Image 1 (cartoon, rainbow, N blue to C red):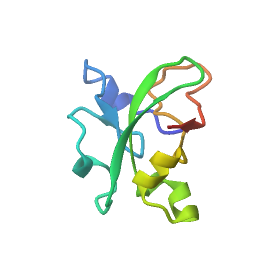
Image 2: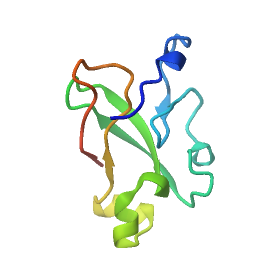
Image 3: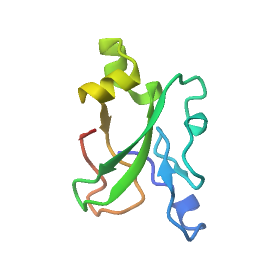
Length: 106
């Protein structure tokens, strides 16, 4: 489970537009150069859901958190086309009593 950023979420009345690879809320339109990995050659925005409450999240992914990339040696785009993108847990905005969880794939 990732950190709950209530210090940020409680101060901004609108919901985040997307979340970065560390599950930090972002309040600007997604662009590949805004991902957490400043050295990323590729970036994508995926939609995943929490298994507990079914809340949908837009989540950035890059080689920073793409474990299959190191195993398979594939570019991010190729892994997406193959359906081999593993994103694991969603952001943690406090949506579920049990804590947000999933084993998300695209």
